[in-house]
Amino acid sequence: MKNVKKELSYIDSVHRSGRIWGIVVGGVLISFPILLSLIFGTLPDLEVLAKGIIATAPMYWAVGIVEIFTYVPMLGAGGTYLSFITGNISNLKLPCAIDAMERAGVKASDEEGEVISTIAIAVSSIVTTAIIIIGVICIVPLTPILESPILEPAFDMILPALFGGLAVVFISKNFKLSIAPIILMLALFIFVPALNASTVGIMVPVGVIFTVAVARILYKKGVL
Image (cartoon, rainbow, N blue to C red):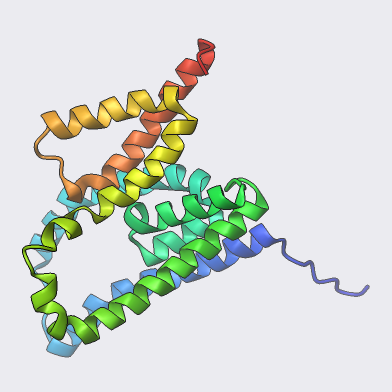
Protein backbone atom coordinates (compact mmCIF):
# COMPACT_ATOMS: atom_id res chain seq x y z
CA MET A 1 0.00 0.00 0.00
CA LYS A 2 1.17 3.45 -0.84
CA ASN A 3 1.54 5.94 1.97
CA VAL A 4 -0.83 8.81 1.29
CA LYS A 5 0.17 12.02 3.04
CA LYS A 6 -2.90 13.79 4.33
CA GLU A 7 -2.89 17.49 3.59
CA LEU A 8 -3.65 19.72 6.51
CA SER A 9 -6.58 22.08 6.21
CA TYR A 10 -5.97 25.79 6.72
CA ILE A 11 -7.27 25.79 10.27
CA ASP A 12 -5.26 22.66 11.14
CA SER A 13 -2.08 24.30 9.85
CA VAL A 14 -2.90 27.42 11.88
CA HIS A 15 -3.20 25.39 15.07
CA ARG A 16 0.00 23.47 14.32
CA SER A 17 2.04 26.60 13.60
CA GLY A 18 0.46 28.50 16.49
CA ARG A 19 1.35 25.80 19.00
CA ILE A 20 4.88 25.45 17.70
CA TRP A 21 5.63 29.18 17.79
CA GLY A 22 3.84 29.59 21.11
CA ILE A 23 6.15 26.99 22.66
CA VAL A 24 9.20 28.57 20.98
CA VAL A 25 8.35 32.06 22.24
CA GLY A 26 7.59 30.72 25.72
CA GLY A 27 10.96 28.97 25.75
CA VAL A 28 12.74 32.16 24.66
CA LEU A 29 11.04 34.20 27.39
CA ILE A 30 11.92 31.67 30.07
CA SER A 31 15.49 31.24 28.80
CA PHE A 32 16.30 34.96 29.15
CA PRO A 33 16.34 35.13 32.99
CA ILE A 34 18.04 31.72 33.11
CA LEU A 35 20.82 32.91 30.78
CA LEU A 36 21.27 36.09 32.82
CA SER A 37 21.63 34.01 35.98
CA LEU A 38 24.23 31.80 34.31
CA ILE A 39 26.17 34.71 32.79
CA PHE A 40 26.37 36.71 36.01
CA GLY A 41 26.67 33.64 38.24
CA THR A 42 23.77 34.55 40.50
CA LEU A 43 20.35 33.14 41.28
CA PRO A 44 17.24 34.84 42.68
CA ASP A 45 16.20 34.16 46.25
CA LEU A 46 13.95 31.11 45.77
CA GLU A 47 11.82 31.91 48.80
CA VAL A 48 11.13 35.45 47.59
CA LEU A 49 10.55 34.16 44.05
CA ALA A 50 8.03 31.60 45.29
CA LYS A 51 6.15 34.21 47.32
CA GLY A 52 5.97 36.48 44.28
CA ILE A 53 4.71 33.69 42.03
CA ILE A 54 2.08 32.59 44.57
CA ALA A 55 0.86 36.18 44.91
CA THR A 56 0.62 36.98 41.18
CA ALA A 57 0.33 33.75 39.20
CA PRO A 58 -3.33 32.92 40.05
CA MET A 59 -4.47 36.27 38.66
CA TYR A 60 -2.57 35.76 35.39
CA TRP A 61 -3.82 32.18 35.09
CA ALA A 62 -7.41 33.39 35.43
CA VAL A 63 -6.92 36.25 32.98
CA GLY A 64 -5.13 33.97 30.53
CA ILE A 65 -7.98 31.45 30.54
CA VAL A 66 -10.62 34.17 30.18
CA GLU A 67 -8.73 35.87 27.34
CA ILE A 68 -8.69 32.64 25.32
CA PHE A 69 -12.48 32.40 25.40
CA THR A 70 -12.77 36.17 24.84
CA TYR A 71 -10.37 36.80 21.97
CA VAL A 72 -10.78 33.64 19.87
CA PRO A 73 -14.37 34.49 18.79
CA MET A 74 -13.29 38.05 17.93
CA LEU A 75 -9.90 37.39 16.30
CA GLY A 76 -10.13 33.81 15.05
CA ALA A 77 -7.58 31.12 15.81
CA GLY A 78 -4.73 32.50 13.69
CA GLY A 79 -5.21 36.06 14.92
CA THR A 80 -5.32 34.89 18.53
CA TYR A 81 -2.11 32.86 18.27
CA LEU A 82 -0.31 35.77 16.61
CA SER A 83 -1.69 38.31 19.08
CA PHE A 84 -0.64 36.26 22.10
CA ILE A 85 2.88 35.97 20.66
CA THR A 86 3.27 39.66 19.70
CA GLY A 87 1.30 41.16 22.59
CA ASN A 88 -0.51 44.49 23.03
CA ILE A 89 -3.84 42.92 22.08
CA SER A 90 -6.49 45.26 23.48
CA ASN A 91 -4.67 48.48 22.55
CA LEU A 92 -3.56 47.57 19.03
CA LYS A 93 -4.18 44.09 17.64
CA LEU A 94 -7.88 43.87 18.49
CA PRO A 95 -8.86 47.25 16.97
CA CYS A 96 -6.82 46.54 13.81
CA ALA A 97 -8.35 43.09 13.30
CA ILE A 98 -11.92 44.20 13.99
CA ASP A 99 -11.63 47.20 11.67
CA ALA A 100 -10.12 45.07 8.89
CA MET A 101 -12.87 42.43 9.14
CA GLU A 102 -15.52 45.14 9.31
CA ARG A 103 -14.24 46.72 6.10
CA ALA A 104 -14.00 43.33 4.37
CA GLY A 105 -17.49 42.34 5.52
CA VAL A 106 -16.35 39.05 7.08
CA LYS A 107 -16.50 37.44 10.52
CA ALA A 108 -13.74 35.79 12.53
CA SER A 109 -15.74 32.54 12.54
CA ASP A 110 -15.40 32.30 8.74
CA GLU A 111 -12.21 31.13 7.02
CA GLU A 112 -12.08 34.46 5.15
CA GLY A 113 -12.31 36.27 8.47
CA GLU A 114 -9.51 34.10 9.85
CA VAL A 115 -7.25 35.15 6.99
CA ILE A 116 -8.17 38.86 7.16
CA SER A 117 -7.72 38.97 10.94
CA THR A 118 -4.34 37.23 10.79
CA ILE A 119 -3.09 39.51 8.00
CA ALA A 120 -4.25 42.65 9.84
CA ILE A 121 -2.52 41.60 13.06
CA ALA A 122 0.65 40.60 11.20
CA VAL A 123 0.79 43.93 9.38
CA SER A 124 0.14 45.86 12.59
CA SER A 125 2.99 43.95 14.27
CA ILE A 126 5.38 44.72 11.40
CA VAL A 127 4.37 48.40 11.34
CA THR A 128 4.71 48.66 15.12
CA THR A 129 8.19 47.11 15.01
CA ALA A 130 9.25 49.45 12.19
CA ILE A 131 7.95 52.49 14.09
CA ILE A 132 9.75 51.39 17.26
CA ILE A 133 13.01 51.03 15.31
CA ILE A 134 12.57 54.49 13.81
CA GLY A 135 11.66 55.86 17.23
CA VAL A 136 14.77 54.39 18.86
CA ILE A 137 16.94 55.93 16.13
CA CYS A 138 15.23 59.33 16.30
CA ILE A 139 14.47 59.48 20.03
CA VAL A 140 17.31 61.88 20.89
CA PRO A 141 16.59 64.60 18.28
CA LEU A 142 12.82 64.24 18.77
CA THR A 143 12.82 64.31 22.59
CA PRO A 144 12.36 68.12 22.89
CA ILE A 145 9.39 67.95 20.51
CA LEU A 146 7.76 64.90 22.12
CA GLU A 147 8.11 66.42 25.60
CA SER A 148 6.56 69.71 24.49
CA PRO A 149 3.69 70.77 26.77
CA ILE A 150 1.71 71.71 23.66
CA LEU A 151 1.73 68.14 22.29
CA GLU A 152 1.28 66.32 25.60
CA PRO A 153 -2.56 66.48 25.58
CA ALA A 154 -2.60 65.03 22.05
CA PHE A 155 -0.52 61.99 23.07
CA ASP A 156 -2.84 61.39 26.04
CA MET A 157 -5.83 61.21 23.67
CA ILE A 158 -4.44 58.73 21.10
CA LEU A 159 -6.01 55.58 22.59
CA PRO A 160 -9.35 57.21 23.49
CA ALA A 161 -9.57 58.55 19.93
CA LEU A 162 -8.79 55.11 18.47
CA PHE A 163 -11.35 53.27 20.57
CA GLY A 164 -13.85 56.11 20.21
CA GLY A 165 -13.78 55.76 16.42
CA LEU A 166 -14.39 52.01 16.67
CA ALA A 167 -17.07 52.49 19.34
CA VAL A 168 -19.13 54.80 17.13
CA VAL A 169 -19.35 52.13 14.44
CA PHE A 170 -20.35 49.27 16.72
CA ILE A 171 -22.60 51.29 19.05
CA SER A 172 -24.56 52.61 16.06
CA LYS A 173 -25.14 49.02 14.89
CA ASN A 174 -25.98 47.58 18.33
CA PHE A 175 -27.34 50.52 20.29
CA LYS A 176 -29.57 48.52 22.66
CA LEU A 177 -26.80 46.04 23.44
CA SER A 178 -24.18 48.76 24.01
CA ILE A 179 -26.04 50.54 26.83
CA ALA A 180 -25.35 47.96 29.57
CA PRO A 181 -21.54 47.58 29.07
CA ILE A 182 -21.12 51.35 28.76
CA ILE A 183 -22.92 51.91 32.06
CA LEU A 184 -20.92 49.11 33.73
CA MET A 185 -17.53 50.46 32.62
CA LEU A 186 -18.39 54.06 33.48
CA ALA A 187 -19.55 52.99 36.94
CA LEU A 188 -16.45 50.87 37.57
CA PHE A 189 -13.91 53.47 36.47
CA ILE A 190 -15.72 56.34 38.22
CA PHE A 191 -16.45 54.66 41.54
CA VAL A 192 -13.43 52.33 41.75
CA PRO A 193 -10.36 54.62 41.72
CA ALA A 194 -7.95 51.67 41.70
CA LEU A 195 -8.92 50.94 38.10
CA ASN A 196 -6.71 52.75 35.61
CA ALA A 197 -5.00 52.31 32.25
CA SER A 198 -2.95 49.36 33.54
CA THR A 199 -6.12 47.34 34.18
CA VAL A 200 -7.48 47.60 30.62
CA GLY A 201 -6.21 44.11 29.76
CA ILE A 202 -8.26 42.66 32.62
CA MET A 203 -11.38 44.78 32.07
CA VAL A 204 -11.75 43.86 28.38
CA PRO A 205 -12.54 40.17 29.13
CA VAL A 206 -14.79 41.25 32.01
CA GLY A 207 -16.68 43.58 29.70
CA VAL A 208 -17.02 40.92 27.01
CA ILE A 209 -18.40 38.31 29.42
CA PHE A 210 -20.84 40.84 30.89
CA THR A 211 -21.98 41.92 27.42
CA VAL A 212 -22.54 38.33 26.29
CA ALA A 213 -24.61 37.64 29.42
CA VAL A 214 -26.70 40.80 28.89
CA ALA A 215 -27.15 39.96 25.19
CA ARG A 216 -28.42 36.51 26.15
CA ILE A 217 -30.96 37.99 28.56
CA LEU A 218 -32.14 40.61 26.07
CA TYR A 219 -32.44 37.96 23.35
CA LYS A 220 -34.52 35.72 25.62
CA LYS A 221 -36.84 38.67 26.35
CA GLY A 222 -37.18 39.47 22.66
CA VAL A 223 -35.48 42.88 22.92
CA LEU A 224 -32.77 41.97 20.39
